Image (cartoon, rainbow, N blue to C red):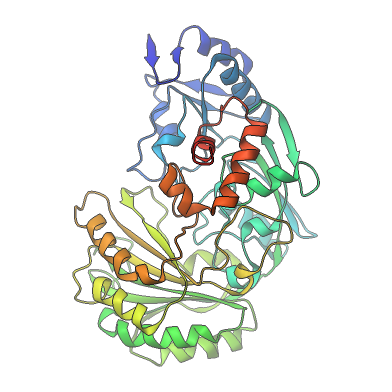
Length: 463
């Protein structure tokens, strides 16, 4: 049996047996029971159909897979949790890193984790010492994929990006070599891996600094959708004057009436104001009271909480979903911006989106990192994200209308984690031209044969 592909034909009973003999991990082909479970990403709408899935257990397994692919003219993709997946990333051999599950937290304030680890085990391990990582809005995403995309989380205005805290990566490059990457060891790779996703190497482990934060004040305060305009108007002025100890966003929700959805939010449009305050709880409570006073509150989740409860701020779903989630970045969010957003996506606008979120940026997010990186969007003032059910034919045309309504403030960019780069258009929204050129240079240096599938877009666009 053979599987014909655009660049190679993998003979399963010959070459794949050779690969199996080099690994401690496992190789699964489409006729294996575990193939679908391992290759299916969190975004159920994105088909991943590699010729084989390689479930690695060690960094040496990744080295062996990349060297095997290079010898046979195959390409290699990589996946942990499958958030931010794109079909073009699969390659001929899809390396699944779930087996790289090391989690080590050092009480003096840093952690080392394997490429298959999600944020929740890190949060739990760090909490024992009163420490916290710069995780994402949900602890169910993978540490490595999130961090290599920059990593803009619920404390971004206070502490910056997750990528800003990285001490070192351990990686396998497309030439089949294992490398330790730091600001002084392979600094060009260190640049490209912090914001450049996996275009230049497969990460097997990452080491990063933690922050001291045993507790925080925050959560979300929810209002009826009919009060959206006045709450957003107040939020816009209020957030502009917040100290950097605060990170905030608002979200227009249309959640179904189903188990797990709070009754106050089910079957209607609501507006949630999200808030995480890293200073004294009394100060945070007083600040959020200024929002609470604008309109009747239908659900109030904000309080002093252990950092273990950080997921409550955004309350993102954790189960794999058949959704589309387009995004954009804005230069500013004026009263006119707010009106245009509400005209398209607000109460009684007929929006089909499950949610439309606006995050305030600035603060530590906007400051350049200590070491140069490939994250191109620190000048953006706000992020806009929509999430809708993929099978609903109204969702993408509606996003096009929303995008057009906000285009006056469009920065031209999008976070790599919200808009995975895979062709010329998406690459140029994820990176400016200089950054894209540098990523391509690093890719060619360490992957001269183009083995790493995700790097293909950068090499092609940059010429």
